[in-house]
Image (cartoon, rainbow, N blue to C red; front, side):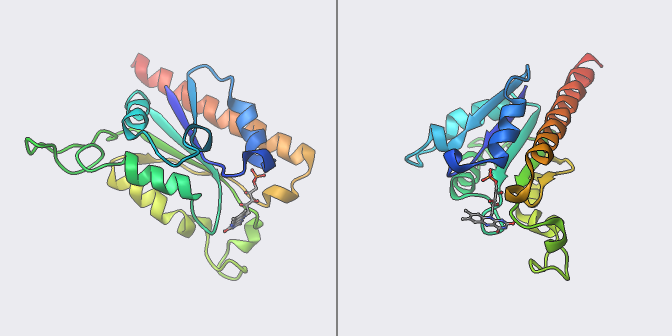
Length: 187
Ligand SMILES: Cc1cc2nc3c(=O)[nH]c(=O)nc-3n(C[C@H](O)[C@H](O)[C@H](O)COP(=O)(O)O)c2cc1C
């Protein structure tokens, strides 16, 4: 199972993420958890989120970049879902808990800024590898494998054919991940 955590605070205004999501939603073996649809009041059901992750071999985090990090509800999702005594730390009996150990994490993010803006000499001064650091380190701390991120730059300036290509590439990336899972399960 591949679980896609989708976090877009303005889904009706989305162009890029909506196209990406539409391109993958029928993939067999994929479940989508649309956080802003599930929790419009921000009351995240941590148990339900943990159950979805526990059933998954790969987790995809898909969102637009907002102020150089994840939208607020996804930040809250990290806090509530990746809880002490489940994702890290110890249970009441003192045993180490790492529920996500060995699972794979794909960060799928869209940006308004062009790729050249995410360079030391660009107006964002930092590379996407640097911007990724808090999410990457959160994943590593929980024992997840960090996969090569899927990044769509200059999302609101993409032409319709460019966006269609990005969406198909995203589908291919998730399909490859599902293929990887079925191959590793056969071994
Ligand atoms: C509140 C807010 C903050 C944003 N912050 C950033 C940012 O830090 N860096 C960036 O490149 N784009 C930023 N953007 C632009 C979005 O990332 C961009 O519009 C989005 O990726 C396009 O995808 P969509 O069509 O699915 O909304 C921001 C947009 C909003 C509304």
